Image (cartoon, rainbow, N blue to C red; front, top):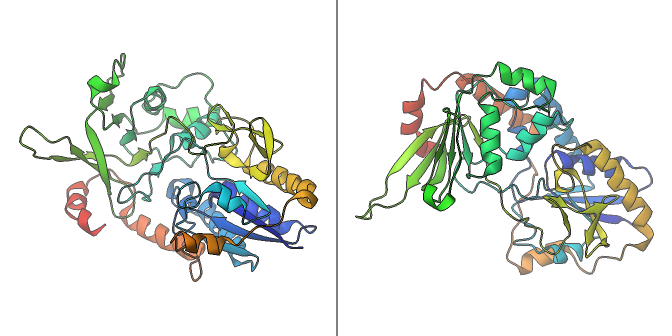
Length: 377
């Protein structure tokens, strides 16, 4: 019997799971990679800072997995939103949640996939020396950054990025921080500062600004600024403002989007990769990557992948057969998934690197022209 597995998330953890499942000689398996993004290119865009060869290696792994006839990509599908998790589970023998840190929110504005847009979780992993993140992966050649949301964790990360390195930071990360060019960080929030409350004493190069709502990222090949709107004035007029930044960190939620599952702090609770609900393992539901552990903790995507495959193999005989087909479920909900047919991660990476080399990562000398061209981005 062919084991039908759905992997939710097409980032590094998701592709590690897919590759491990496909490589297991004892499993007759098909894998559906499901992601809210139209194409599985998110992990390719962190990178010109990480180096050309690293990006190309990642792209080759992505293409290798997608080229396997046992693999299918279903993009533009939000599990837990347009596709409820229970209905997904009913369509597969096993489901693996590899969707990243549960509190990381998507950035639902134009230009959200620009190079330079990342997450707090990514920075936390980088600071801790996690094997999931290369030490060169965080670009520190820019001069300004914007963090979305004003909270204790964004204030802490802003302070660290501005050069005030606390104890416990991985030596390689601390060395890079000591030589970085980033000396000005703004934190923005749609709430007013009076609504947020006392922020305490901030370093002079960290500025918190309220009543600003981001609406788009300015920049052709990489982020250069974020366009924001102020609250309407007494006459109903709305003013826009562009905040220069080459590093932008997405907002973080207060609660996880995975309702009905147990949580251990800010990640999904699990025992040996099996997701818990009400203190008991959920049959056929597994977790890997930062969805099931803190980015700054121990572990790695490779170790998680091996553990998930081991758990699925052990549970194989007891997994119930699917009650339906995911295609039918999506069709009934009016969801038309995107596919990766004809798309190549290697080709996309080569094009990205070529464009990036043309613009480079020099200071924002071309900023005014970029703002004028924002409608074309």
